[in-house]
Image (cartoon, rainbow, N blue to C red):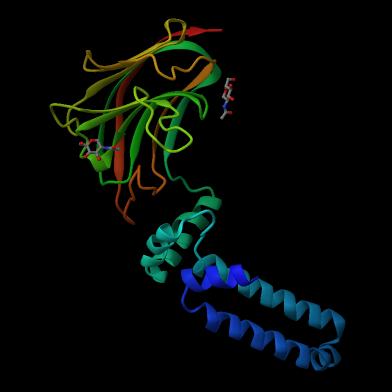
Length: 262
Ligand SMILES: *[C@@H]1O[C@H](CO)[C@@H](O)[C@H](O)[C@H]1NC(C)=O
Ligand SMILES: *[C@@H]1O[C@H](CO)[C@@H](O)[C@H](O)[C@H]1NC(C)=O
């Protein structure tokens, strides 16, 4: 308990006030409950307190940020955002998300039985920072081969990765991820992005417009996978944070796949 109080006092200097108010109302509750129960009877009392829970749920949903597993430094970043921005975000994105509004788009090759592929996509990516266009194979988080274009890079860079790109201590694994530059901006012009995942040769080769940009034999996925093309963003430091009402787009001219199935 003492540790909890200390931690909350560090993270949130108003914690002592919050705890005092909490205890004050706990005291009031003890004093007032018999009177409430007499006038509202048991169902009324229970209904009254469940109503208060609904009010508390709504307030917490819109006003209390998620802090699970964040460091104290990350908490500062969380609390640097004004409450109004957080409440707006909850309303606009989280609630709409549960009502099935889309945050990104995705197409994928239905069967998860691809055993090697040359995936070529003629595409262009444009728009505000915070979106990631991805062409990739996926089985699980350690069996994944990616081409990614980040709008926050000004669309002049290409990211190629075999997941995981970092080890347990969060150090980058050499040869698992590449951040290559393009000599031109593919915002207006079509670029042919190509991922060759060759599990039987334990090799990945990545191309842009027919030119080899990277290749590796590190962390090459070895199990049957699904093929995805998507545009996503989750607001984290890597994908970048898309401002409310900003937008980005991924246009696809054509897709070619030469693949081995099993
Ligand atoms: C992913 O799949 C591989 C091969 O089946 C397995 O060895 C590995 O443990 C899986 N990793 C995760 C994170 O599930
Ligand atoms: C890729 O490299 C460029 C230039 O060094 C850098 O500005 C950019 O932040 C890098 N992107 C990522 C996702 O690491």
